Image (cartoon, rainbow, N blue to C red):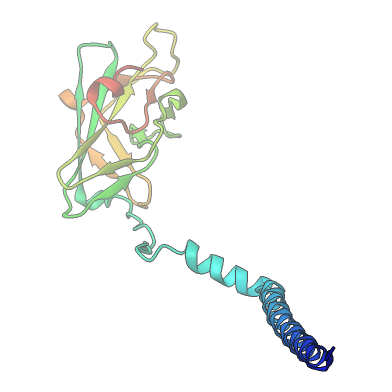
Length: 213
């Protein structure tokens, strides 16, 4: 029986199988190297250096800034009303008793501020200005546009007759804030009776507010 060809054939087959196995292992190794490269690349991206604190702050500043914002300039400061460009008028009223109404009108071409209360000198020999009614102080300074008026109520004497130093006076001088000089104003009827109960309000918006004290 001749067995040599059979053994030779089987040997050839075993060699071929071995060759295929080696090739398969080589391909697997290459594939593994590729996967390892991908994983390594991914890790490198994940561990990339983060932005520094200054860079983040700068980016936040850019995002917070409103490109449409407009800077506003300083608020314009109004001047005090010029007494030489302010007209004054005083009139006696029926109610309340012992009261007069002082009116100040801006005759200039610009808006001005009338601060506080008028300072009154009732009579040429008056030793002190008329006392101001502090309770009448408004919440804001009175601003007068050209031609606009403000009002102050004047109590000429104590309404209950308890005042001292009563006398008739024929002179009234008015001072306003921001001016050195005063301006004389004609009294209704030429004179008025006054005593130490005389009072004056702050500058107010309307006659009714001025006479409500």
